[in-house]
Each structure stands twice: as C-alpha cells, then as structure tokens.
Length: 358
Image 1 (cartoon, rainbow, N blue to C red):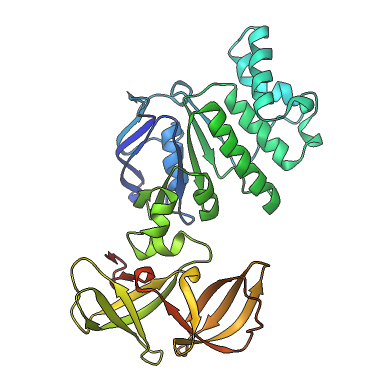
Image 2: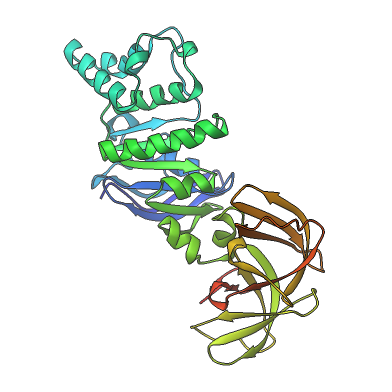
C-alpha cells in the first residue's frame, strides 16, 4: 500500500480539526483531498509529510509506520502553492539543490536533473533564472525539484492556485502525464472540484475534518452519499428542492415541491420507503432537466450561451434558484417562463439531515 492512514486525529489545543480519518491509497495511485477552506485537507497532507505531528492514529508509507519519523526520512517530497525557488540560482541549480546538499556525485546530479528536465520539458530553460520563466514553468521547476529526490510519494498542496485559468488547465494535463510517466504515488490537495475530478483516481471529500465520502470521480458524481457531496462535486452544482412525499407505488415516489405551487416530481427508490407526508430534499443536476410543456415552472433570468452548451439561470415561484444545462439549442429564453422535467432515475433524494435515500 502506498499510503495508509488509520484513525488519524489532529487537535490544536482543545479544538479537534481532523477526526479519526482512515484511508488507503495504493502504490502508484493519484488521490485528491478536496473540500472547502478549513476542512482539514492541508493539515492532513502536512501530517503525512511529517510537518504536523499527529494527535492520534497511525500513518504508513509503503507499509512502514512513519507516524513519528522525521520528514526527511519518510520518502516524500512536497510541492507547495508558492514556488519557493531560489531567485539567484539557475533552473538547473534549483533542481539540483537537494542533491548537492546530500553530496551526490556530480555525474549523478547531471543525469538526475537532466532526466527530470526532459520529463517536464525544461531542457532549454536549465540555464535561466526563475525571473525569466512563466508561472507554469516555475511550477514545473518546483515539481522537478521534487522529482530529483525520487520520493515514494509526491504531496501537492494547491500547487496551481497562483496560475491563471489557461495555465491551470495546461498544468493539470502535465500533472496527469507526469503521473503516468513516473508511476509514483501522488496526493493532491485542492478546494477546486474540477481539479479533483480531472486529476484523481480516487477523491476524498472532506468537511470539518471528516471524510464525507471516498471513491472515483464518477462514483462521487453519480452516487453521492449525502447532500454535501452531491452539492460540492459537479459544476454547475446540483439543484436542491424541498419536497413532500405524496404517493408511493412501490417503485416510484411522487414528491410535491414545497412553497412553489405544489408541482410533482417522481423519483426511483429501491430501499426503505419514507411515509406519505415525509418532508425530504430532491436533488437534480443541471444536465438532467428537459424543457417541457406543463412541467415545473421557472422563469429564465440569465442565459449563458457558451457555444454548444448553454446554462439557464432560473427561479421558481418561491425564488429558489434553478440552473439548467442545454446542449445544441440557441433559443433566446431570457425572461421567459418554461417548464422543467427530469427522469425519475436522475432525481436523488435526501432526508432533512442531508443523508441520501437510495
């Protein structure tokens, strides 16, 4: 196993910020910790690196207990949000710094840095200073500095946050290619769920120091365990409606929207059946709506036309916002009333505490 956490906890004084977190990340896997600011994801990463002491539990790297091992001996390399390059040193010397510190032979330094530069397409920049590089190139140098250490595990703490949108997309592709080339275990922290969806083999969604759900990107997208995961994973976010159960034929629940004209929605439910009259929350992703006559009425406030796809920002009668995704159509709908419908299998149900009913 690449990295294993067993009931890991972290407290600052009397405040517990990481609560009994357990996870398995296989050797060569690409795991992403995602969640809102303050959820404990960076603290968890720093604990794996040894930069924060654990308050309880156990951390293993390649089946070795490293809970109390100093950072330099854990076999990890960390890439931070800031590049932290030495401005007076060349790209080559920045990447070679840790090797020179370890008194590696000159030939080994040249070979190792050269290989990292080839992987990261930095060969023509080795003699330049950081000030002569773009933001994306500087981040590649920071990654190269980690590669030359040949760690068992790479740790990335929001490394793309300082880049503009176009560079972030480019660097996401480069990180994916890098992972495939070197096959090392990688753990990546971000608050950006798009980064999580595009990079990860396995995502761990955190909230208030607790893992809400773990799984592949599509597992979390298609089958969330609770309303928090359903709303956090996916862009634009899932739409939520307060509803009440008004009928149940054993396969389909008929749900009536509350405070919005008592319009009906149907959902498939295979498990325990809530009683008639139970108040729940229905969740529907923007792409699962269809425009129909006589459906759930909403007024289109803004239509974002992005070419093949458009997003309709709408409101129900009770002012609940609804986002609808459409493909292909370029009808001018701003200000119009339309009806919405969704297939029952695409309507997710959550109880009032936010837990998913399946």
